[in-house]
Length: 159
Image (tube, rainbow, N blue to C red; front, side):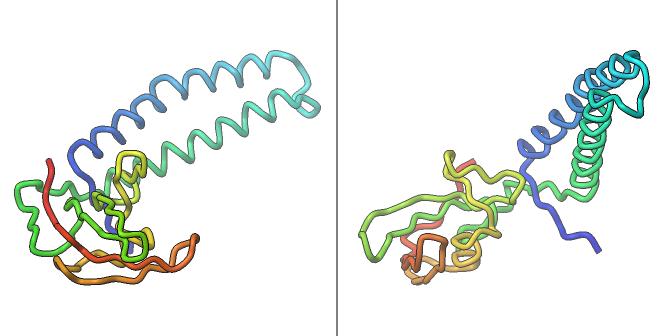
């Protein structure tokens, strides 16, 4: 059984737009490359043709993966987000117990994670550790950078 994928409406729209671009623009561009390479003669010794076919294969796999994700995606209702615990779509303010610095992360699905925007996946080490936690709870997280200790200071919803 396929694993559930949870998306915001914005995340769903972004993936849909990416799929549409791949199907309507990129597919046509790659087909033209294949046709151009095919026109150069003997296909058995045509590296340009092999490369174009490989690019076409990669594109079709990416299209297929996006179509699958969108077909099984559950769009989260932002009006039903609770802030009594850290759930997907909540923003969690954490205090690093070693450095005393605070960080703020929005918990999202893997498909919407973007660390530069402060969005971390619920499947990331920190995301997994804080999911379901309440304000004032402490967590320890093994990250690639070593053990990190946090305290949950605040849980809020920012649409």
